Length: 359
Ligand code: KG4
Ligand code: ZN
Image (tube, rainbow, N blue to C red; front, side, top):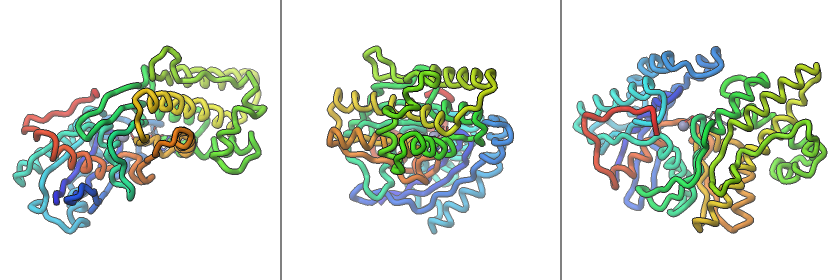
């Protein structure tokens, strides 16, 4: 039995959690506390790094006491400390990295700096039904859109990624122009659902998504948007083309004094975004002969993306995993879960552990 405390401060959530791993490898969350700064950053329409760092500094000590109290543990009951050390906002990352190093030093515990995106993948192991290796991990968040062929907790290979913007960024930017509050992902998801139902007359969202390319609105070339899936033999993406085309289209409609059909447009935008992920994921599953998809990261919460990938998995008889909704966004439990893997397969970091903004 091992127990790991995980710290996360890479963006706009300060999070601390304790996760236990039993002899069979099963992970259980003992506590998982988050202080979200979303309301603060919403005033500015996006994350203000300086404000994020200060808010992490204010929140992290109290959250640590709370996480230990809720787990009913003291630091001596822990085996190790895990902290997101990269990638992310550098000032924000430094808060948890320094706090975790002090905590580890004070309590004589080993420390592991973990990769934020690998931690998102580890979140899938906290679900009731955990995946088995190997699998195709699809990591989709505010800053990442990547496909990994994952062979084991310590071996993964990047097989596709965005060459510019991330899918979450693409939802947030266009969502903001549609008047949705930051971060726009969840509201965009709901608006697109209305659009899929309206365009197809089908109330079931998964069926509506499948019928969408046959509907009249999809045939209207005035609302045509490019696919973010690159057709150059790679499994890569370009989300900036989709985003720019949508922004231009919205300006065009405004210039002509017309009204944008917001929900239909959100559906069309979402359709292109999720179909691109599904297309490259399908190619990756077959090319690398992988038996399952693990969808993770903040955008994994997107219901249409889940529906599109479930359909691909059903078609090819592959398994599909996604963490529970509460663990898709940034949290400490995923960091502690990745810490459980690191504790068994990696060498601990030293007190020289530093944060890095880059991947
Ligand atoms: O992983 P995450 O919490 O933070 C980063 O590591 O970036 O991901 C945040 C992103 C934001 O862009 C947010 O709009 C998006 O996840 N998101 C969604 C949904 N819920 C959150 N995007 C699409 N549909 C959703 N339901
Ligand atoms: Zn994240």
